[in-house]
Image (cartoon, rainbow, N blue to C red; front, side):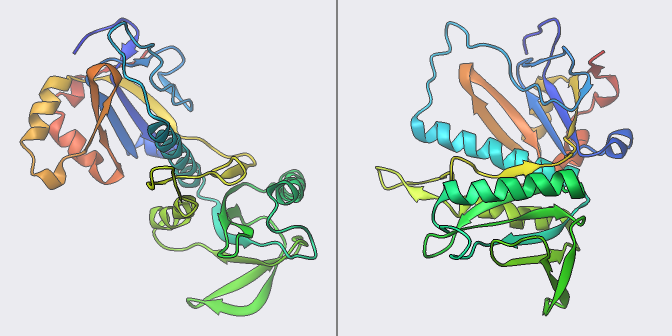
Length: 288
């Protein structure tokens, strides 16, 4: 692994200050090159990312399809992070629009009304939210997502899975449902952002690819917290050797990127494996 002053090859992501203090990383990204700059990155809510420019030998170019796919992956990850970092997002909501309120098929009409309503709710009620647009079977647009439980609501008289179904009192553009989220939060979050994939459409070659609705994969607002990131250096060669000795089902996802670089991504269910295979963890160099 090459060594560059001021750069690090490992990024740890935490979803709360308490998780950081307890060493409970939600994700670990370890590259074979030092791609993370340490400027403002020792402990930060900014992901920093790979800021290195391509070198002379990095001639890789992305196809339109690959570019769309990567953009979609980044959007899904950001939405997932917001929902995981903000445990007070505990109301699963659905917002629909009635024909009497606006053209349910026009993004311009819908987003105009939705943005005004959301802005008012954020300022007046302290709302925080993550919303995903979705097409109904007939092409009408509606939204699913997570809200904080800060809006006036009334019981609809209905239950779903033995939980009360509420309506949001201030929503005047159509029908709403709101249910309190319980159980495994990560499973609930994954259930919600699967709606981001439902807008997929076929490209000119007949392949399915992600599609934005109104130029957006998701909407978010309010005083949302972001992940905390920590940057360190680890011995990638030793880590790689140790990973290759693991059963295939324990090995983390491996990512290839431009310039012959590659990295391992330890998701939340494999972070313990990172500590298991990274024998020199106690002696890593942290950003200062």
